[in-house]
Length: 156
Image 1: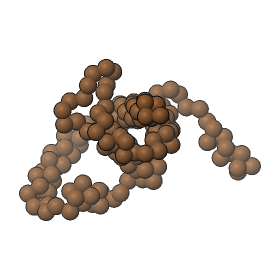
Image 2 (image 1 turned 45 degrees about the horizontal axis):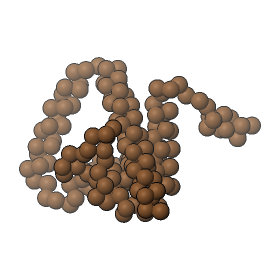
Image 3 (image 1 turned 60 degrees about the vertical axis):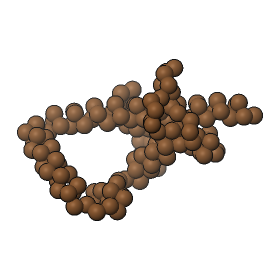
């Protein structure tokens, strides 16, 4: 009986704009990208073109997008690092000195502004932002996959 209840939860369909739907779609598209891209190094020096426009000079190549999208998927599936570990990872072990102080002041100002908003407004702001970001990242994963398939079609 308990297994049946779990299966119902796993197979439940969510509304189109539900955050869970967006998250599931992102995770599925990135998993597909990982399965399709058998040789990620082929993505080096390939630029992401957005709907016929060429990427800006100095923009990340598809390999960087590939690794970023995979890392985000891992965070979504396995949880985030504790804040201190994440900050240390981002800092890359650099001396934190003035950067930490500036970051703390910026964070305090941000918390002050957010503290003035009510919790519901904060939730909607972050929810809309997360929805937008995940949708954008899903499109990037689809683009990486498509471009890799195009390259492999040309190479074969």
